[in-house]
Image 1 (cartoon, one colour):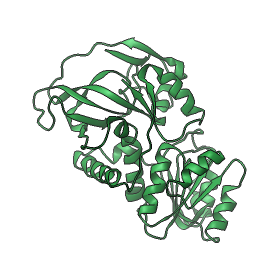
Image 2: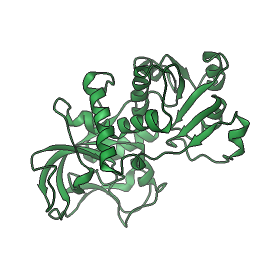
Image 3: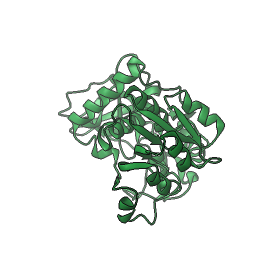
Length: 323
């Protein structure tokens, strides 16, 4: 089968369309034929070497949807022909792959492969952010950076459904307008406005109960200033670079605030928790509480172009690679 393979960390061009051998599934394994593969910043972090490489060569890709081709001994939850999806750290940018059966979830009827591949990782991230990193309550003011990104568009709708006041930041008028149609009461164009001052005005000086920050280096200091006393700073990404210079005393300086750096995989490691969070996400998508826009579709072998666009912050919503 074919895969986008990288032999060393580097830019988008580090990925090369290559032949890869694939064996039959072993005990507890499933062989999947991919149909749609999501593109995420996590893929960029691994490809660039920001996150440690798992082996000599790397196939990036953290989420996909497809069809079960064969199962190994001891697999009972899925069978050949089932439509399934998964989230993993890497390994998805390929036509077919082997994966542990306990990582798979069945795709509900009525949801397309492209919708699930473009929303599973992002949607599960939003789900644990609003339920576990900080349990959002009605009336809370919540700030979300990159509001027009894949996670941001889902978060805005989820926060609105929970009765919170969603405040977003975006880099252009077009992105700000998009975010406004996805649950945000206020969207701050951070390239022309001081988002700290804007949040102070919006909240009448009270600050936010939580800030969900996937940008990192460019925003974290301002994020802390946007919190109310005993608020929660949630850093779940670093699209602008790693946070540098953070000190525990910064939390005291901004009103006994708290901070956490969650990782999705710690919230879906146990299969029962994975299924529970997926059920919550799929239910909200199917009822329309969370609307998933049609993703930007590209052939798998154009993953290099997809990464360049993502790193250049030239995307909105989600991108999906089609096999």
